[in-house]
Length: 111
Length: 123
Figure 1 (spheres, one colour):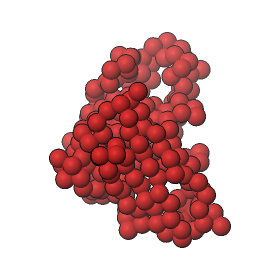
Figure 2: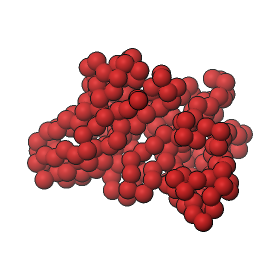
Figure 3: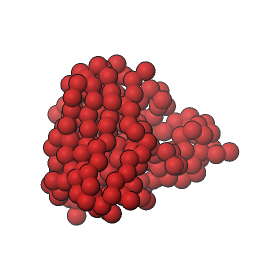
Figure 4: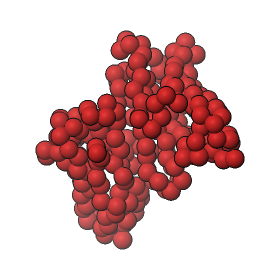
């Protein structure tokens, strides 16, 4: 079954850094399909944070960065701020499904 | 203002139909694919499908969970995308979002989202 696996939660203190992983397989991330990351603040619509694995839309701080290694991708957040507390989702295309997958989401808590 | 404004949500009984609309303003929607994503209460994001822009054939791809029941269409002249949902099930209860893709081809990063429309399926 094609899935993108994220840790349910991560946490960090203000000023620290965290990394959120997104583990896929040879039919999605491992096949070279781009990964996109979204931030969803409580009670709001999702916001595009990273597109095409490691590109930031204009207006997204450079504290957010994306990378990929094999069948996995990661979102790194440095210099944590209270306003970073949100749910984060990865997204990629899956060739075996001929469709798009979202990861299950990761809740970031800023301690 | 560049925005997507949704309409058409509400309460429906199982087996009935609903149509959601997603009206674009401030940009040329015909240059972009449009995706639909839903979020059940307290749950994560679930991709429903997208429709490519006309230069890419205007074709659609949909999740297995909605194939045969949901139809995605677009009217670029009016600047509106639609999600037509037939044979609704209780598990279709969710907030439905439309979103603009960065390119016309398909999923390339959804950089503009509608405000969401709540669909509740209940007898």
